[in-house]
Image 1 (cartoon, rainbow, N blue to C red):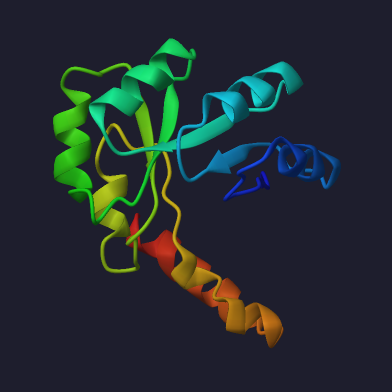
Image 2 (cartoon, one colour; image 1 turned 60 degrees about the horizontal axis):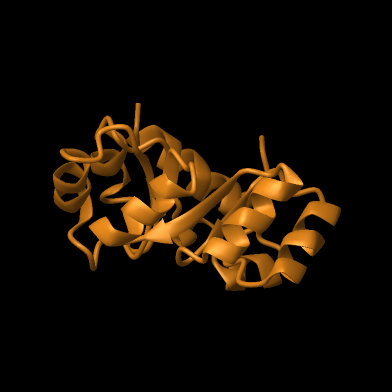
Length: 146
């Protein structure tokens, strides 16, 4: 398993994530400063995009994988397929609105390499140390894609 850090907004957070053992960085939007900083540090970065203009910026920065965020609000799988027509070389990691009910639809899309979903790891479950329940939700998610 690879552990990454998400919702990274500042270079200090990149440093803290690397120090804590993160193997990749995810950000909600495309901030060229954060992308370049991660590239200089040699850590993979997956910034959030939702438009063709942001995708072109990501490609200009040399990225081949981006987060599509928020996925459901921005058209879901239909939007990913539409954006993939001109940007066929790009792969997507959708987050935002991904659930147990739709994860299989997203992962069946060839342009999608992974999905993020917070329903599996709710803050309340972590706070209450209900790790068995988190494990069960993760297993259910995996079953959706088989």
